[in-house]
Image 1 (tube, rainbow, N blue to C red):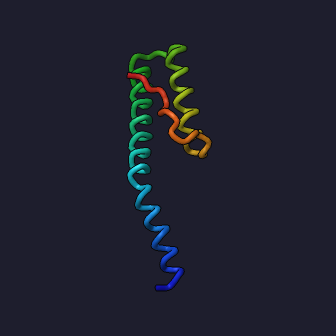
Image 2 (cartoon, rainbow, N blue to C red; image 1 turned 60 degrees about the vertical axis):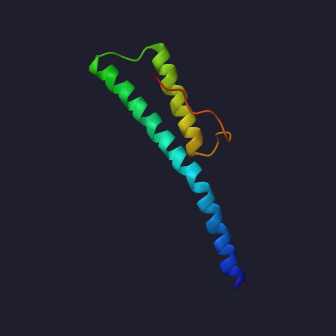
Image 3 (cartoon, helix red, strand yellow; image 1 turned 45 degrees about the horizontal axis):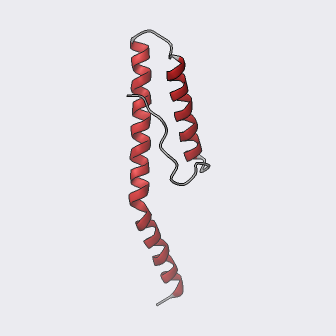
Length: 84
């Protein structure tokens, strides 16, 4: 078999093996964003500014998502904090 094809097949296998983790990470990020949106929507509907604790959660979450986006998050780092 052509060595280039073997190389491509090996790379394809690596991609396939990483898909479950990538899908889970995408789902986690989607949930975190949704929770943040819901928290902000609640504050807007209550016509109030975030409390200091809510700001801290929003800041921590934003920083953690930014680190993941830019690849600076440590592998296996905990997910950003969220509000209930």
